[in-house]
Length: 279
Image 1 (cartoon, rainbow, N blue to C red):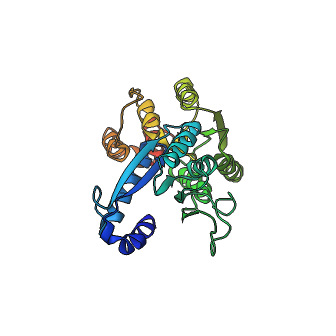
Image 2 (cartoon, rainbow, N blue to C red; image 1 turned 90 degrees about the horizontal axis):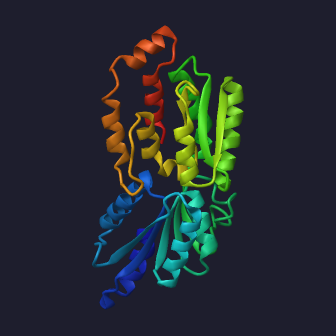
Image 3 (cartoon, helix red, strand yellow; image 1 turned 45 degrees about the horizontal axis):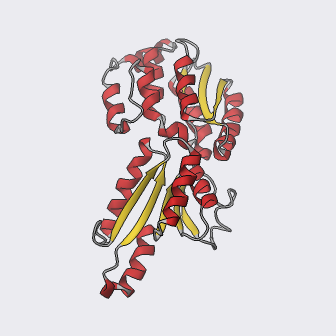
């Protein structure tokens, strides 16, 4: 979609050889993969980075105030448009800007969030893609219960300042009641609080970790995985989460999940699998 916004004026102004400046705002962690997807999509449209466009990437690292600052700075730097990844980041970018066009990927209904007027006619300066992620949280909890039949307690962290996360937690609570699973909720307001909360968890306190539609928590997936294995991560490290998760899964006995399920018991290996499969 961003490619379409760039490609149309590019044809009309080809003689000027204009280089478009695209701001990208995200929370880091797994969301960094969206930048690769953006580059690939623009490349498939015949747009070459450095010749037709330049990306100005800003990471909030779990801080929505930093996202607002980054979006405002990008507008003042007069980028041609901003690509915002996640619902909460898009809300922050919209709030911090006035005129710059914004293309978004939102996991939550953009109409309900007030990002666009309607699906048929977005109106205004925002348009994008809707992923319906919160609607999947109850199903993911259901699948987790199937993976671990004796599942009793599931821990979820969420940003108390994130409207999207609050809505997602309501869906999770409703699903937990139906599945007769206790949901252990930890409300946090920063990455530092999230890190402290994770490190305060004790062995046996919960049976599984489930991440919801919260960009800050998802953005710290690497931290959650490493914490489960008693490892540490420098806060400034950039980690290929998908690659590292696959490597961590090789540490598990190949028959751990199958054997545990057959015996109807919950094991630390099952918790690690459930953790690693969380988006």
